Length: 299
Image (tube, rainbow, N blue to C red; front, side, top):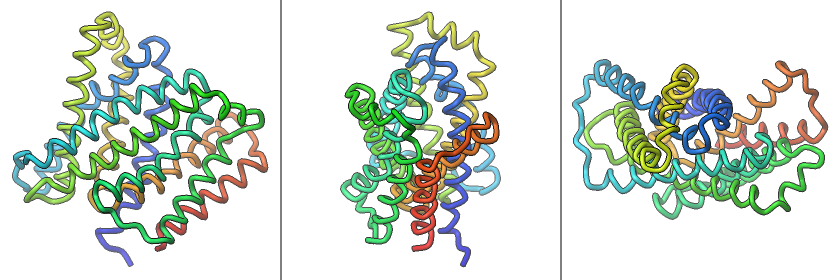
């Protein structure tokens, strides 16, 4: 039966679609901008869009503009700073390994999010939900690893980078959920948009100061590449808006597990755009992802 609480499911699917587009664009900018330059574009060019989203939400809902509480800041900083670190490590891992293999490492995030969510927020997960998370994560790893790619697990640098990035993304998800749910006196939509504005502001400020101090020429390159950067920024803000909406309604682990459908979207793009056939391994992984996700949303 439909309820507001079940909206986290379409919110997560929309966010995953936006993230696929953002990651592809962001990765294409790593060569001209470097790792941290490409990381900054999602924040620098996403921030103005987050403000627009917030203005629209407040106008529609009629909610007051809340004042950040003392409890809000630790969660926000955890989410914002961990996401910066996670994004940088993700792009570094992608430089050493293929996009798909890196995805296998990154998607251990769902398991780590469940652990961190339980420890820090007391998010409760039933036994069936834990099983669903494990099944879907196993499916991602199987689908992502191609023949010969198993060697990637023996190559410690990209392996550790990928797993550490997943841990940082997991902490980021928990931090942002913690920030969203402590915003007082407004609807969950306003709370999500409000958290996004502050989150992107902190991330933009931190990375821009870092680049000004360490690599000011990168900022000049970012401005010259404003057209593709603008698109990546918009898609980043768009995806984050829906992630935060989902975080407002359910445990971060549920959201990040359903987000594994991102792998299905990536496989579909590869198949229809590049005519890459699916192997038996990939099909088996996809089946596990579907089973795990179906179990998650049904319990």
